[in-house]
Length: 409
Ligand SMILES: Cc1ncc(COP(=O)(O)O)c(C=O)c1O
Image (cartoon, rainbow, N blue to C red; front, top):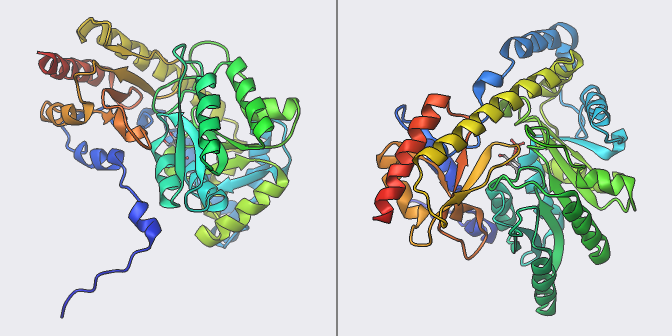
């Protein structure tokens, strides 16, 4: 019998596999040093405390943990999260918070709720690949805005110019998506001034502003800048900011738990969207994290994580200085937090092609082109510094530098 050709939807045609996931498969070979994934350092996971918390769930709330739960999330976790937010200066009510199956679920719900095929989202050029994939899957488009030369946020003049031109061509722009704290992939952190300017722009144009903050707490240098969500709450409070948070980078990505903060009527729409996706986030996992959080140890873990990443980031910068050829057209960001730095290469080097050579030399990165919706730049790479050991960082940068030097010859 002939095999049936599945009749996939037009949405499916637009879905693109992530280069990162594909590279992650390759890098599971034990001798490869991978700067490719966005993996937290496993040594930061508080394994014993998480195990004890899971045992307490079985002892105290087994039936509740094993039953279906509400779509909004278990009240025990929501209350703990509201207290956590309050300790970081964000005052919200239960109706402003939705528990999600980590932030990627929110990134998928956003285009599901806001985009009709052909609608537009304003986002950084480059921006997080998982957000691009979700927007593409709903046949949305991205109006990419480059960052300023000072690397303190969007080039606001370019935002105005590109926005006006897109509107003049009839583009229906639905929301803005940004990662103001230590952006994935570049590591850029937005200044207060730029955060305010973008918020004002969103008010003026009546646009929802999505602030994705997985790395916000992982600041190891300098002073924290208020989130755009906070600025909205404190200022004109027009309530058009949606803030995405997750345990993935502050505790462990395997928890697959995140949360969203927004105006109550917006949260309500997301609750409906989430119902058809998973009914509810795993009640067991929610109660597990509520138990873990109640023991008050998260801040300690985040503190240790910051210290460790600061050391790894510093060591990686030293190795880059030591091994990379010194040229004006070869530079890298020096992030004050997060998990990544961004290396810009001479125009003559194509980082997509270079990756094959790098993998031959047993070192991997993600080519910068993966983070562009359209018209990608090919001379950059994202390098993760959180996962590898110091020895691997030195050896990996040495290998990467030799691949780059060969390409320059
Ligand atoms: C900017 C950004 N948003 C969202 C996510 C997804 O995070 P989660 O593990 O919470 O789904 C990531 C993961 O790396 C990310 O970098």
